[in-house]
Length: 89
Image (tube, rainbow, N blue to C red):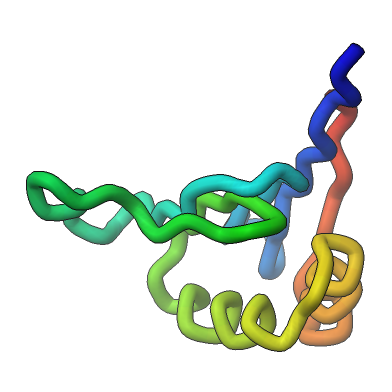
């Protein structure tokens, strides 16, 4: 039996800027152009994420680069002033 993924919604103020799941997968920007034909989205080894607000993407990626797990990433985002809500599977 597979354990359900954890899902996190990340907010800055009232605006949702990122959605994260604790499964390896694609890194998607909702505002960037789609990948070129024959290429796919950037993949990540311990989470998948969709970014919604381009002004936050650089910092979100920098924080991710310094994280070794989803739990560490969530803790660091909170330290940077983001509000993180864990959603039930």
